[in-house]
Length: 378
Image (tube, rainbow, N blue to C red):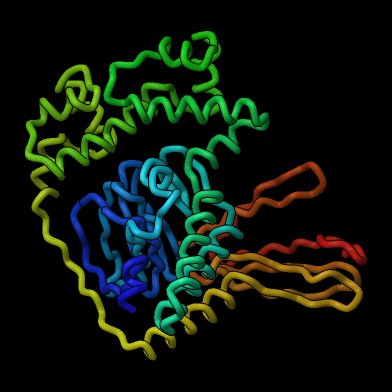
């Protein structure tokens, strides 16, 4: 595995908690057992068994086990594998689940596909596949992440239907990320994008549901945290370095995101204790684990019903759901029952051009009937 470790490392971790720290390697984490609370500048996120997510390079992150026992499978990317991805991967942020800042969600099918890809490469890692094939698989995952899990891209795809508008705002967000340390104004951004001040202000509010100052301060706060944890520089110098006009303004903005002052944050996290243990597993144990996880997510995430004279129908559902399917003549009824007390499911039901929303709690079920069309996928 030594040669493979130069590209990626696979570890099984029994997690207690970590303070906020700067993640140095692109990491994929899969929850094997328990519940994990992952906190970033954008807010906290709960990850349960069979969930997967991405921790970005240089991302400030805090991990906490919510259950007494929390086991995670981690795929770590080393720098040697990046190649042409190096600049892009370091600059952008990727997430599978809800991004609390941009309020975007990756497609469930993409999340499922990434889970399969991660478990496949972990199997290859334990089986000792040759390094060329391993490198191809690792780079394929990077390509897939870059194409489907970019926070900004997903947000813009939801906000703008016209590609020209998406590309324009993508450049605007990139400009803010590159110049957060400067005292940039909305006028300067408007001039950069060749837009009127009024139009750009309205687009920020209507499309992104936040003004440009909110976006600017989000990136300033991320970089302020990096300096708080990685340097011994004074808070005043850090505030100035990251574009804040005054220490008071920095303190107020920082508290909006992190719930405390920069000084308190540094005190609580810079020298905080990391409570976790890497579990040593043999090659055989690793292969058995990945196969068990593959079977588990396959059964939980997808149910396939082959039918005579009809195209295969695939029903996707979260692992926290139980699905049963019945046939009635040329209609099909899907009933979803929830088996956990703290779960709430929001279902989008689309009929033609109309979409409705149904909320289900424990004990509820819903029937969705539709007519099957021969030779066509539903």
